[in-house]
Picture 1 (tube, helix red, strand yellow):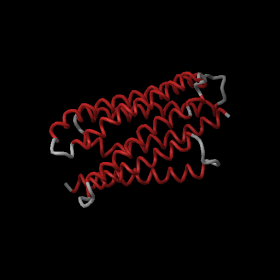
Picture 2: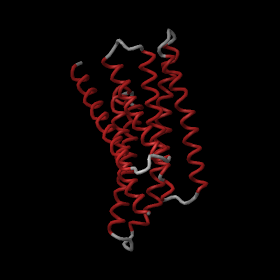
Picture 3: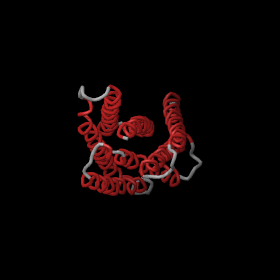
Length: 237
């Protein structure tokens, strides 16, 4: 319907705008364009743009090859989902001093990415074949599994930020420090809430709505984390 198309276009436009703005901010903010944090933000942002582009082509443009559209969508999805976890991980060392925890978290992120992304991509291409019905149910199940896994993964890292920074809220620390940490805690709670919303959509079979909002949600989360993690870095320094 026209209303649905307008909603999709509006959501995609906001996701585009936030992504382009973030790319410019990253370029201006970073004096040195190196490091895991820098490149994970760049890759995640490009992933959001690709996923949004793929979804627009899928919704509005029928002349593009379906395989190409799916590739654009899935490359973008992989980049922004696992990329966002890498963004969170790359600044976790500012508050978590145990290298073993950081090492195992990275291993878990990479394994989760491989285990969860691969079946979804395979099933997505399977849905394009004449055996569509064979792949539909496995895809539905895997969608819920991957959303749950990535939500738990991001929630775990957000909880680590919350747990390891809560001490800075004590009266003995400067007001500026407590304000930054308060903002950090608020952002982590918001990230958890946004992930919960996407997960709820999956479990209530609102897959189209989830796909529409997914790039926007990740662009919001990434922008918030970029702001607060930069403040955290300056605070720790």
